[in-house]
Length: 84
Image (cartoon, rainbow, N blue to C red):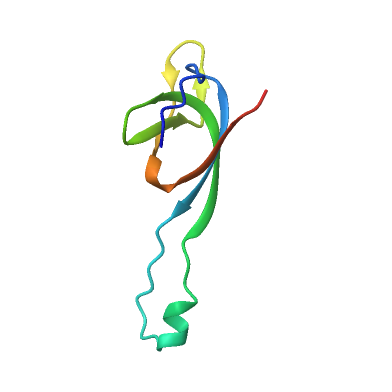
């Protein structure tokens, strides 16, 4: 996936991405075929990105910086949108 060069630090973003799912019980063939990745939506403030991942902070303040960080692997990202 290409870098999202138009995003600036603290832009409000929504990232739609696919998360890995596992099942730890005994399953037959049909049950195994019915398991799919979980579609996820993360909203927050763009922090930065590199070739492999994008970093988003769900909470920021103007004095002490970011409260948390979420790192999403770019290979899992379906779509990145900016909102106001």
